[in-house]
Amino acid sequence: MDEQMKQIGERLKGLRDALDLTAQEVADTCGIPLDKYEKIEEGEVDITISNLMKIARKYGVSADALMFDEEPRMRSYSVVRAGKGMSVERTKAYKYESLTAGMRDARIKAFIVTVEPKPGVTKAYKNKHDGQEFNLVLEGSMDLFYDQKVITLEAGDSICFDSTHPHGMLAKGDRPVKFLAVVTE
Image 1 (cartoon, rainbow, N blue to C red):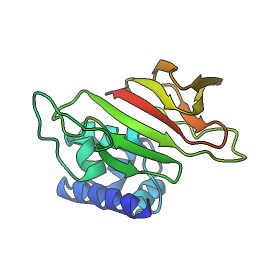
Image 2 (cartoon, one colour):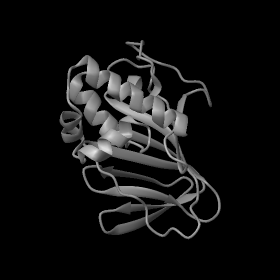
Image 3 (cartoon, helix red, strand yellow):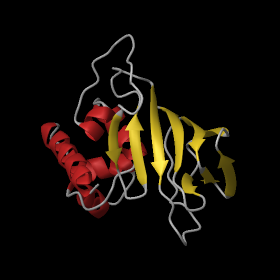
Image 4 (cartoon, one colour):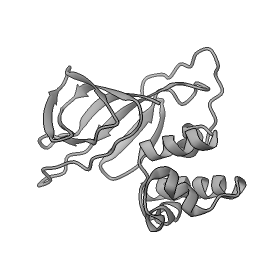
């Protein structure tokens, strides 16, 4: 995980250098303090998927290139075989497997997300981003924290929501939760 955070940070710094941007300009794009953005570039702090998508959209690059260091190539369709999606473990608790990384100009991003349980933690870190999000729980169960609500989802349950509202996921019990997340930009 630490190595992947460092690689993402290096790609962000490379993008910033190539576009002759200041760290402050990119931090402003993300809506985060400069010192936090600088720590992201150094690989000391993780960046959210939503902030990667904001950067990609604003500067005309692929979010997949920032996350996985690979540009999508397919224009008509892209097949991802079971368990073969590009994978990144962004934090100790979240692992993302992209199901749409091969599709050029995809207007949706689909991931299989695995969230590890955090014993003793009762609230999830909340994030927000443009668009909408759809989650379908494949294995385990989770609490979805949405605004001031907590919604429990079990295997087979799904939810679609406005992702401009603060939201976060927390695995319930002592097992990881695995869910399909589809995000629109």
